[in-house]
Image (cartoon, rainbow, N blue to C red; front, side):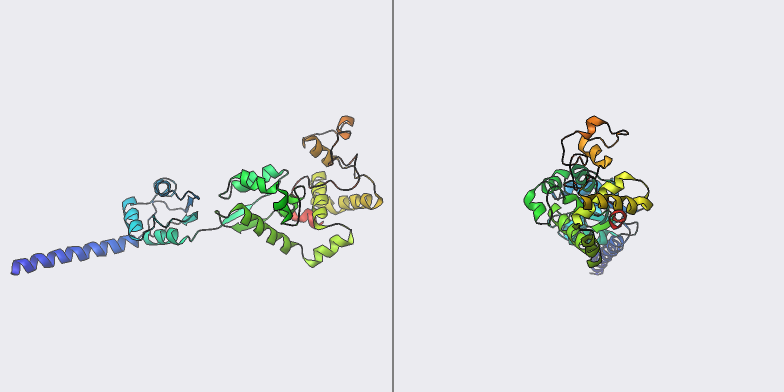
Length: 291
């Protein structure tokens, strides 16, 4: 009887020890690295792909322990897309909980020096989950751009070069909605009043700013150049802006504008047409818009 009690007590002790070890282990740091790493789970929600990342991109010490804990917490059946941060101090339990609950880290999205819709779509797709073609289709869709208060020519005026916090798995439609909110926040009553004073809409201000910014690399000159163009608009004169001709030709590297360039048939040729072109020739900076 004593022997049976001893064996039982020993087994119980071993079980308690194993539980204690397991408890301590799942609360210990999981990462092999002493730097922050990121896990990306796209809309395929590929569990095998995640496990691969946990061996390469964000390597952890014990993949089997992660798999066991993930299975116990039913994570494989509850995968959520997103961008997740794994710090050197992230424990196994924290890692599984974070992934299962979809507690992702937002991306600091940036863009500048963009001229074409295609370039913009590609720049954003490099930072978010959706492909460039998905966004480009919306930028070229009359109904989609109209819902944002613009058209397919002026749609790039919606985007203001800055740094934005946005979740990596945000769909293209939601991304545009967020940019519209930023746009509406930017166009305060004060800015709208200034635009009205020069008889331009917000989109037209951005179109003019895009031309000004292509004219000079010196921000201190923005306001002066803008003033010259505004005077030409008031007088009904052609702007005669060389950057618009380069845009119309499709070669912004042109050093000399020749007669053949000035004769090109394009709504962006401000030597042949009066008024502003139908859209911006680049996404202007906030500084250029304010100037």
